[in-house]
Length: 539
Image (cartoon, rainbow, N blue to C red; front, top):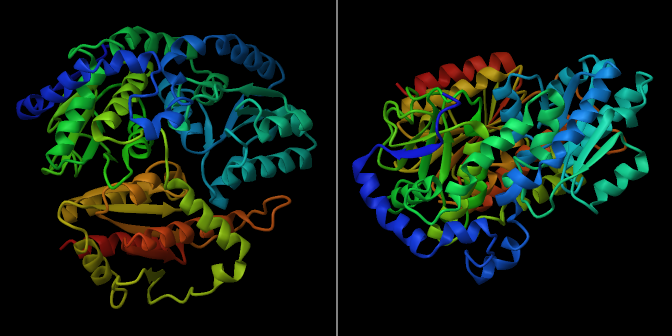
């Protein structure tokens, strides 16, 4: 359970044997100790300039301590004013860690990492009199987060609430957002360590402020990380990060480029969603990398029946098909997985701190927003089956019944490739969409990932374009019943969501990847039809 000793166990003897030389190489090169001392040369000359400003995460268990008192003081002040509902507006590294921390601690945190108008409207419908919104962005330029800030500021003002008193900001020192926050007089601005990239920022202000304001014990979280820091810095084959990185590298060399992650009773809630961004965005580039596949449990398709192209990893005790198990409390596991990811980057020969392909989808979406006609044009579906409209990239078959279209699409994925389901929907009201992952994996026998759009664009989006090019992509979009205006912007949330789906699909197609988009003209009816079609396609 959550209080157990932190460690890594390789249950598969063959994998342990193949991992040993990789571990010995890391120890001989003193990579762990050099990483702990923030040596930027570990990933080669091309990565050095980026690495030199991205390694402060190795000591956050110490440097983040002053935040404990600051966060508690603000929380006490807010509670004294009757403000006890915390909403977080943030994407990727700004939302995934605090969501895991809050869920594991059992405290309420409303996370907005979406452009779905329905989901944002639900958050707005909460008691604004009791609400504070934490707006987290390194620069402030993240379009989703900026939209949320504008929408909530207007909602507060319309309700007669001083918006500035209800907005708390987490950003980098000297950022445009820091300047804007000063100008607007926002309640509190927390300046995060600028020498930490988003996916390594769990123990910075980005992870700690929202979770701490919601009531999580962040001092304990930092203590957990501190408890394993010395072991992670050791040049020893007993170092759990060395063991994990070596096992991943050995499996990858053997053709298992997917890492399937299931919880086996760790007590941690949603860890795989956080690890997904860390691993995919750090390693998925230059045509290589590890694809994390977050699954529902150790009995789930993809884990229990994993083939040679995937390594099942248990978060918690070894169970079922797990070849590797990682145990320990949340703070310790976060630091361990960060170390292991940086170490495997060296073994794979990539820079684990850049994300060269993430910006492409953002640019495509911005281009569509600047050209509304392009959003409307070319929107004639190839096929309409009930409440589902079918669109496909070049070479994707889109004629006939939905089940037949899906069958052909699934079959187009290489046997050792993967299927990615990308749902640009409401992850609360349309939550059942996530069940498609297991259904598709079970019926196709292929590794299948599931991501909520646009949230996954800040996570696995890098791997899809930069990693192993053997994926096929099923996009699901849906009709918007009631849209939301973005104040002082020429688009609505619904238009932004649509542009993000089309933009990412366009970039994937330019990479030669098959993209099938299914648009639900009625979300509930369309989803039911889609589930039936998936079941039929697998028969």
